[in-house]
Length: 331
Image 1 (tube, rainbow, N blue to C red):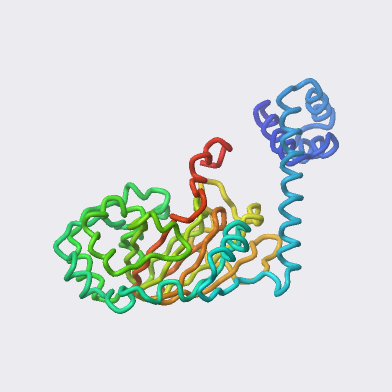
Image 2 (cartoon, helix red, strand yellow):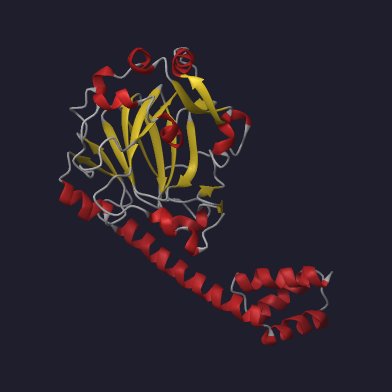
């Protein structure tokens, strides 16, 4: 075994918090003689990088303990690990018990006066903006990393052509007009704001500040967490939303940026186990919304032709993305 291989094994053990005896056993199990393994482990006492790895492993263990306690508290709560449904929540109550508590909620009655609930359809979209050129995410099914590589899938299309394709009502994850395209589509889709009204939970001074989503049945946003708090409002069709809490980080298999290696896997609703995270699951239909707190993992699947809006313009600072890199976040 090369010296590099030995050092890699030791680094893995140190990062896992192993003591000298466990490190020695790790090397011996890999084929290193007992004497050579003792020599390598003894050298670590004078290695500043080994000392730093041990300190970091201790910090990680402490963070794990804190997250485990958050899990215990969540599971011991009245009603257990569950998703609350709120009906026309008072903003003060919402902010105190959900936004500030980093707790998701399904919400009804927020947009019951929106004309969009009656107006939005493919015919309506064609009438008000059909001649516009819009940007969409396309050819997603050919790329397992379509969310991570969003820029590679941006295409300009005639809105009416996209609408005609959607009229086929075929299940697909290949084309989706998403929040990521909203900047490019702001002018083209501006008439749709006439079909909406202010939402009490949001900052009323930030008008026309949201993101439009349109896609067929079968569009799937894989497991990830956002870098802001989000309110997802369903207008046309239904979406299934699965969520996992931040304290389940170790089971979310996060190796790149804000994405989970679970990808499009269907994780079962429930309290999870040693290998899978606890998951909340719900379906939102027209007029319903879901509050997705920053850091909560989620996966969203369209069960029908779907049109939605999402908003980040809350009454509290919501620019968590600005300091994301300073924490040495993955990816």
